[in-house]
Length: 298
Image (cartoon, rainbow, N blue to C red; front, side, top):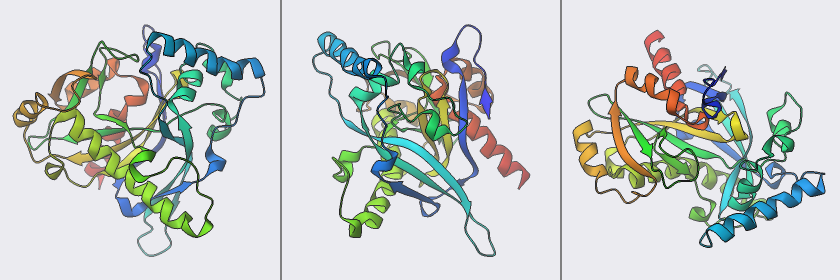
């Protein structure tokens, strides 16, 4: 499913890479973490060198920039578990990348030159950094959805509306590089999968100020990708047992006040209007709408 941008704002166009309208709990989301899902360098040496050039330019402008390690989106596989219930499951394919490579590929003015003509998405984006972001659809106890307005200090899409989110972090579970011990791979994949769910709760707590104890266990609802810069984001749904007034009060004391300037608690109808000012990678609202429709028809 793809959605066109408005003529005035190509940054809002998005594509749904995977949709799980019923919402998948942790037990039905697995991860295959392997170096085969890392980025492949581009054969054009000059284009590849532009990654360093752009990063060095950024460093001159802001010497405090840090090239942290991120999980790279290498695709996914949906499948049904054998048995009477035919449960839908998803396997996320993840490699490693870093912020420097993200700036030099996805945010490169020549980013489209890194793409490969292919219907296979993992081949199409094989030369991109594509760190997998995360976003949360948080529903308050009075059935409002939490939306943040990005600060004008941020580099990407200042002033736009976004859902709480960021990235799951390899460093949170002690990953700095790929493992070589085959015996530990199953355990490692399980830890990375758990970090997908722990990471989104951490981001919601940091960006909104609500306590983790107020949130239900998140369920995975899909992956949205911005057409511009092909940036992907995994989306989760969680309910908060605090009403919208209480959430707004907690937001004023949130840890992460730099990236956003205002919190909105909005109805479904209001959310649809805000989508015109959301980056394509943050159009998880479409995934939420599919989830609501699935609940209505069940």
